[in-house]
Image (tube, rainbow, N blue to C red):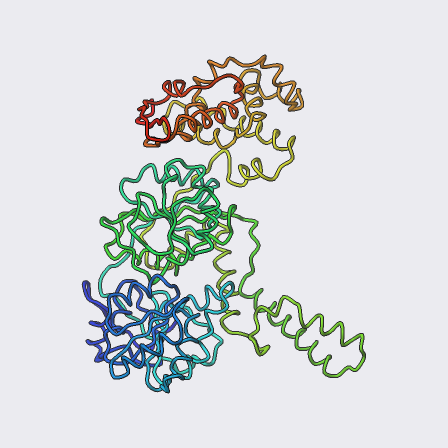
Length: 599
């Protein structure tokens, strides 16, 4: 973006200070402002400006938090009625009122204005904050662009963001002034980029090395749920997400979750609704981790030029460290800008050709097929309600494909961070013997024999790691083994592999009965003393857990079953004492145990 005006800002100054030095009392009209750095108080500047304002924010959390601390302000979102807005306007008609709304709430403001006979287009200044969301979110949130037709009717209007994106081919922005707020000091943020074929293991290793509060940003509830299940440290994490995300997590064992940012836990997950605008308050600067889990969820890509910068800006007190863990998918399908140009041109020609042909023909067969083609095709998602190309939807097409392409190569992602000019970063490639894709194939996709073949192949590749004396490598090996060997049949394969070698397992054709017979019922004592048993116990019974004796027996029985041990006999909680220090107690309802410490 080329700029018509550049206003400098000094260290310690706020957005309003830069405007005043440029001779502006408040945000000028008909402009697109790149404030470059998040957290400069641009929204606060408009909330305190001596004029009536409508401020559009992308999500509910930010409008609630800002409306609470500013007088004459009303937050408009789901549940706030037109009558409530109209009453607010009547009460504050002579004041410099501020209406903060999500894009979806804008039509309620419009109707309320008509109810109380206010011409909002002349009376109010309208500000669209975090305006890149108009382009980035429109493909799954069509309602985000609803205010835009009205936006251009306002006499006084502006868009603002630390990372603005506007459709280049939208003529309605012609004549808008481009303004840059340029810091006159070094502002770059340190970041470590880790590209890996195993996001799960890398995330576990990264969080183990962090002390204090950890905030993990990942735009996939399914990925977050798998991290909960497979990384013991995250079992008590809290997830801040949408209502739909909350329901998914509720079904997954009622894990802690919230739509609003409350007091942070030791570990915290955030989905994309918290990537921008909202303030995240933390007593001490947290460790921030971005997770792009391309094999688990392609939508978890993070744009270095926008989202990465916005996320860091959520923490007004600064951050302790920033790490981006990303998997790379060379085979990920994406289109270049020139390919999109050709696609749109070709699709447009065919689509409007169909419409012209429909207008000409009277043949019932031709008309039927043309109407079917016009009514359902892959060009329709880029058209507005009037059947015209929508600049925001088309800009989203370019943006989405451009960001996806970064994740086909570690070099491209590295270069994208470099080109932002915002980061001082290092890059590490961390490759594991078992990738996320292979782990998920073993757990969910492969037929039984193919699964067994891949497990043996992975065990061969991990042999050197199994003999390593380095504690970190041993820990990695044990965890990867845990995620590889997940059933009784897997356990037979593993035990035979260790005792007789890979060729024996192959010659047995991976047959479970043959392998079990060959093992001749492995010594129960040996299994119970194994590192894998200890890891299973520690994952099932975390330190601090308080559970009933009956529940503990049931959980222990499940662990034994997974390890291929006899579960028909009586099991007591006494057996836990070889793995952990426990404290016995009794409440009104049952005998209880508490896990004090792992041995």
